[in-house]
Amino acid sequence: MFCGLLFLCFLFSGFSLSSSKTEGRSFPLPGNFEEVWNATTAILEEEKIPLAVTDKTNGYIQTATFPLYKKEYKEWAKAPTLSSSGFCVLEIGVVEKDPTMTVVGIRAYFKRKTGLSSRGFRKRDGSRGVFEGSLAKNIHERLVETKFPGMKSVILGCDLHYDDKTAHYFIIGADPSSLAYEQGLRNGDVLMKIDGQDVTPGNLFGFFLNIPGEALRKFMIRREDGELELPVVIFSLNPDAPRLGFRVDRDPETLNFKVAKVRAGSPAEQGGLLPGDILLEQNREKLDSWKRYYRIILKQKEGEPQTFQIRRRGKILEKTITPETKPALS
Image (cartoon, rainbow, N blue to C red; front, side, top):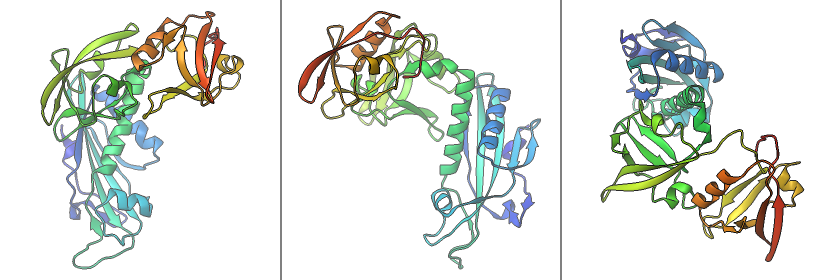
């Protein structure tokens, strides 16, 4: 049944897979076969990648040959510096390990259309693994969006990237101005356990769903200097809650909360808030951390005025904004 990773030899437009060498990559994803198969085919269709073979019974997909621009080819293929555009063929195998986890194997075969070619540089090039990783990321995001829509409301302050070589998740995007960094997480941290349980693609999302506003989780992470347990607060914002209609960023140097965008016609605009305003307090509570910021948001109620102390061009001002009665994008 593992036909998807046998990588059969087909011939399209003079592109022989049997004469090309590529290692391929495998990606465990959180779902059963049907869910992962549907997410995979949906992404291939969205990316307009043509299909040649679709064998759902054996979990096997082979694309037809599709062209790549020079930038793509150089980024994705182990090609000479002087290489030009080229072509690609993908082989994809989908195999369910258990009802909570399915592995997607992806191999990309590359062939140059033009460019440097000699005894030292053949026109069939190996893969850098970049394209496979990007495609798997898109499949994963589509799967999560479909299967775990509640994840859109979960705030951790960083991303968890699965490394198919070590079979572990590690932290990325934990910038100095992020909630994750504020709680001690750092880029490159390897996530070993949450609340004493080993973390796998099959159980990861269970730690982040059905959170009533906020929840405390114990993260066991590994760094170069050893293992460390960190208490990490995770927030889940109600997508139907009333909004004020503005978005903030946190300055990485000053750690001030700065208004980045004010939606036209929103309560924030009506209340006189402007992009660039520094938020100092909300309802007399200092805005000095992401945890405090989100906890105040969780307290907001429909029709209940919110009083902000802001700094604008060196002056301290007070603005009152009332959350709108209907949810809207902020």
